[in-house]
Image 1 (cartoon, helix red, strand yellow):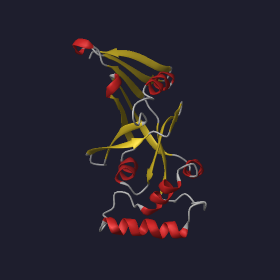
Image 2 (cartoon, rainbow, N blue to C red):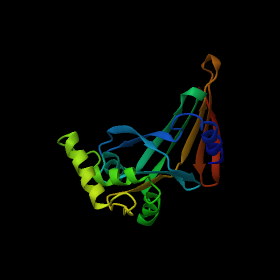
Image 3 (cartoon, rainbow, N blue to C red):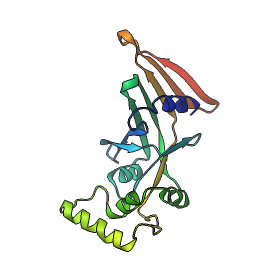
Length: 186
């Protein structure tokens, strides 16, 4: 995570440096990917939040392993981390939810992520109903159907682009004795 922190800091000037592609697979092994935002990291892993009824949450429940990719193309770098994914506690999720902007809190309540919506108007009406329920300045509770997940990497690859396509690839692989660092051919 020390190396990851250095690279994330170097990407700080990029738009959405915390945007990561999250890949999961369902119980039949069919993969899917989408962009989510990294909301925290540490020795225990990489943290993101979503609706527990979303496709990604269903896939994590069926196959609790994932991969994230940080595509920092403008600086010629990417990081790929893979490992088991698990829900964080409701208390941790609620604590983070309380820090979110008001519009994002209401949006979390309004959207039944990944479900079919009849129209944009239906979604907007739901949002306005919730604004009436919790006007700006009112504490909005964290929904029970929303929360955080932590990917605990067992491998992390750092990729640095180089001329002649002789890129640097360093893979950190967790072992019983700590991390093993391996250089991979480009």
